[in-house]
Length: 582
Image 1: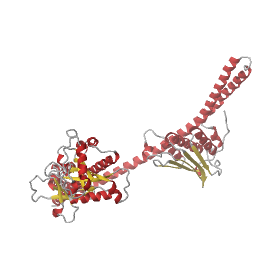
Image 2: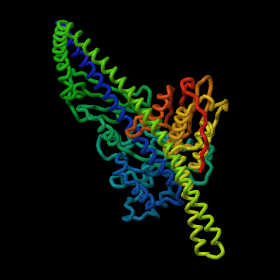
Image 3: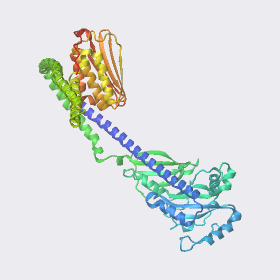
């Protein structure tokens, strides 16, 4: 019974989860459609503003250049919902006859495709807004010559747009779409004479030429957005709710199921209502769909699968607890044995780690001693021989300077080559073990920083407290700090791309510490564990062998800081050895 109760609970939870997920998915799809509709309105508004800019940027508007401009927009491919782009010229009542005569005189019958001008309505009551340009013309020839201001509501909207310079949008169908039962809406923007002031209402009225407008199919606009909802039987109704108290919740602009008669009966319906701004007019988009259409075939079986899983899982858990309770003693014995083996393994691992550290320390010590021995042998043998050879070459160069020019030139080249060889030998000795280490850690650090400045050109600052740094530092500690500085400066030069490096060396309260920081690109956390990179590991091991502490901190584009410190009471003091030079 308990297992059955768990299964029923999982069935309810899964059903509610599926319903919530489907509802949220449908909400996101509705919002995507809302966004697409708003983007379409924005795009068509931009087309209207571009057309108004075209009218104000050319000296004269003709049917030919207007046709070329609209053709360049490629409405069929780029703006498929736009039915037409037109221009309604402002014609005062007293100029009506002259305007009609001018259009007839400049007409080109059979060439531009426009029919003969017939003003409609024939009787004028005041200033007119006559459509004199319209593209594309096919199917809309009857709109040519129509006075759109004959309708009082349109006339008021045009007057308000003229006086404010703002865009006006129609709330009712304008009759530009030739498809039955699929209304077209319009937007219009006033056009003024160029180079005229437009700061006051009087100035705008004096410069007013007319208005450009576009008519677009609501059905085409919304159908493209509705395609973003891949749900069976999804329905979208679009209404204009700008007018307060409008019957039936506002004028119906679009209904995706206007031709479908199937009913959904008592099936659960999910519905979302989202607002859309149509250039100052408020549209209301209602998205509805039956809940069953939001589920896939797998979703329909998931609650029952959850019930079965809960029932079987509860039974298995009961069997597991029963088995565990009967084998408790055996589990305790196994745990004790595993704990003992783990402790033994940890002890062996710690011992192995300790031996490896001792071996690494011994290897470092042997390496440093070998470097020191090789450097001294190079100095004592090769250095002395090169010095004697240089003296002989210098004597030969001096004696042949006047009597044997050609031999003198060869001797001079040999002398220069010997000097270069001496410099190379000196560099090799310094790379193996700089003689400046015999003067103490402070002098070695100053020398290394000088070499870094000379080699890289990077500004490098040294700060030290100067309080008897060399008195309590033995040779191992000095070499370790010097090698850490070498490795750090080498990493900065290769990877950091820094312009400033700061090195601080100080002794305080029996602690010798050194920090190297830069203002470079910083270091990612994963860089420290990169395969084949042992520089930072070597720094940490050197300090660990001396019983000190090492801290490496850094962040991307925030530089890197290496901080090492060693207690001096653990180190045996040493004193500088003899200074050898080449």
